[in-house]
Length: 230
Ligand SMILES: [Zn+2]
Ligand SMILES: [Zn+2]
Image (cartoon, rainbow, N blue to C red):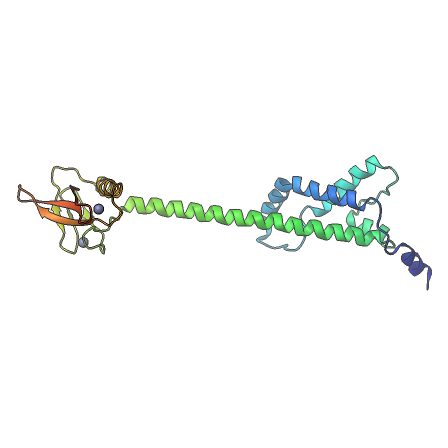
């Protein structure tokens, strides 16, 4: 057994006393660096289009910062980070099991970093879906499709003179200023009025009125509800 191996086996299995403190503080610092991490992540995504997956974004910084902080409290700890950063530190420590400890902590931090990013991506997706659905909803509102209450098949044609449907439903609305918005409101308020007292589906019908035009009626056989929609 050469010197290096003897040296290694001497340290094998020993956990450095700073491990748990250092690990815990790195984890906390990473959690508190969430906004810095995500800012960096967004910048990376913009500059290299989803490249760089797998590489840590701020884990090394977190480990360096926390080691420096820990070291300033305990002068006995070795100065690990030189100008070469992590690589140099691993070089210094390669004879000890401390290397394995640091790698273990690094792995843990990297998987936490990953889960912060994944959570961010999920929220982003959810947000985009929500925005899309709102925009689609607004577009629908603008077009104001109102399904014919008689045939439940076609969209109503609503203009300043009449409401009509391809199924034959026709109501003269001259002088009533009926817009799609008003019509929808009338339909909804009658339906909810009936629903206050009865859970059955009401039916709509067109009934002739006295001025030789027609009314749109809503009625329910179960509760004897009857009302003019317009
Ligand atoms: Zn119809
Ligand atoms: Zn009813």
